[in-house]
Each structure stands twice: as structure tokens, then as C-alpha cells.
Length: 378
View 1 (cartoon, one colour):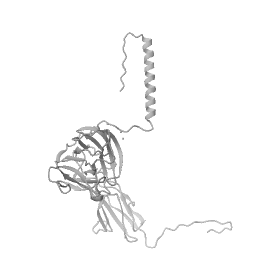
View 2 (cartoon, helix red, strand yellow):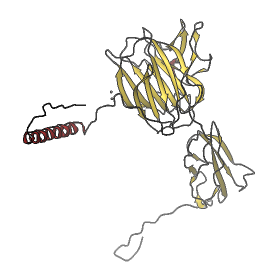
View 3 (tube, one colour):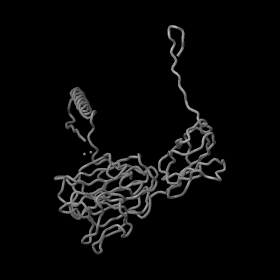
View 4 (cartoon, helix red, strand yellow):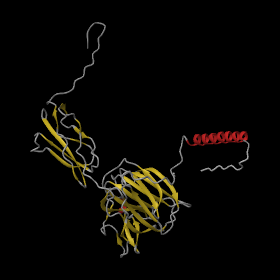
């Protein structure tokens, strides 16, 4: 799931016949094109071999360099080089070096998946590659997921994108998916078919705009798509593969050693609610702010002191743009502010805002009044 050339011969055709022939040709092509457009208007064909997207800033992706040849004694992959487990994946899934090559492992056996993360943060303008040494022959389960732009290493909550290689009886399926929340939750963005032969190299490249992704086979682009739903400035590459009775085997992992573009610290967030100076707020209000471009996490501070000398809350673990507060006092004024962080630095704090909580015992009372014919109002 992803020119007609017309030539005429004879220079001695009479002008009137030439005009009639040209009119006939025009009508024929017009009607033919209209019919073709009508047939495709409701369900366009899937993207297949789309054109490359030019870099708007002239930035060039950094080519991958060989980082692991797997030429070592048989052992689990995590803990070697820069490899770590995808956290919390089921059935003790992992990957291992076997006979100087790479294959997936799972405590649940065949038709279960195992995966690892290349535990180095990278950014836009990077790529990762893997050689396919042996195909499994299985056409029901995916042979390889090559992940990029993953915001974390957690199986249940990670978001990003992936290149999918699914072996088929004819040409194999190559797909780019949006992923998450969770490494197995996905939306297909683009797909094509291309035969992957043993020894071929699959590459997943992220261009410098940090939204355009290319799938390449042996260095030749076979698929591209652009998506900005998830755009962390720094992120991880990762691998997942299925355990088969006849194993799928990989070799020679390459990855870019640095990003193709400069990652800047995020800008200071802007606060959203409660509005500055708001009164009669709950003692368990939810405070919200607007996303800061390039932010990976946020720090929220809450204080009864406008100078923030004494903090009621100082939470630097936030990845969402809201947080519910708890156990505040009634009839009290609170101040709050937020900053943003990524791998290149931390922003200044937002402007501080304040709100006042509701007085103890106050409640919102609503009346329903009805005038009866006798004149009484209830």
C-alpha cells in the first residue's frame, strides 16, 4: 500500500485537415484526462516512489557510519556498544548477536517481537541503516521496524516514526508509519513495494527539516513522506523485529554520528490558564501552558511567594503542557511559572501568573424559578 507522447508525421497535410485533427486530438485528450480524474477523485492511489523533497535551508543530512558489525561472541545485544533495551516490552523481548550477526529474541518464542534502542540522542539530518542478511520467508509478520524520531525508550508511551519492512511473495512492502503513544500503535503514512534481497541495505533518513523522512534501499530512495505531529528536536533510533522459525538476520548497523542541523534551546513557554489574576479557583486546579517549540520537558513551579523563595511545587518531569495541583489552601493567592528544556539547554521562565482560591464553604448555587398561576414563585 502507495507520459504519454503523441507524435504526428507528414508535413504536407492540408491546413484544414490539420485543424480538424488538432481539434479531435484536443477533445480526445481532454475527455480522457477528465475520466481519469473522475476515477481517482474519491480514492487516490497510494503513494509510490514519490519525488525527493529538497531541503529549504540547504542542510545536508550526515551520512551514517558503521557503528556495530556484530563481529563478536554470541551474547545479548543490550549493554554492548550503545545498545539498550526498549523499556517495558513484553515477553523479555530483545535482540542478540548470534554467529556474528543480529537477530531478535523473545521469551515467548516464535512470532513474538524483540527490540533495542541505539541509546544516543540525535536530531534532524541523520540516518540509520541495517543490512538484511537473511529473509525468513514469512509474509504474515513484519520482519523489521526501524524507528526514528522516538521521544523516549518506553514501549508503552514512546512516540515517533518507523520504517516497516514486511516480506511478501512478490515485491516486499515498505512503509513509513507514525507511531504512538506506544511502540506498537501506528498510523500508516505512505507505502510502496520493493524487493529486498539478501545483502541489501535498508536506510531510514530524517531530513534537516525534522519532518521529512526517506526510505532507501542500497542508497536509492524508494519512499518519502513528511509529517510533523511529533517533532522532538532530539530523539532516538530503535530496532524491533519478529522471531521466526527460520530467522530473519541482520548485519552492519550504521548511524549518523551527529545531527545535520543545530539544535537550539527552546523558547520560554506562554501560560494559558487559569487566567492571570483569576479568583474563586478550586483548591485542586489544573494549570495549562502553550507548547514551546523544541521542548522535550517542562518545569512547573508554584509558590505563595511572588519571588518563589519557598516552593509548594517544583516539578521538572513534565512532558505534557498541563498539570493538576492538589492540597492548596482556601482564600489564598498562588503564583506559578514554567520553563522548557531540551538537550541543548533550558529556556527562561515564563511570565509569572497568579490566581486566588475559593473561600472555604463557598459553593455555586443555582436556582430554578417557576411562576405558578396563583402568583407564587418557587
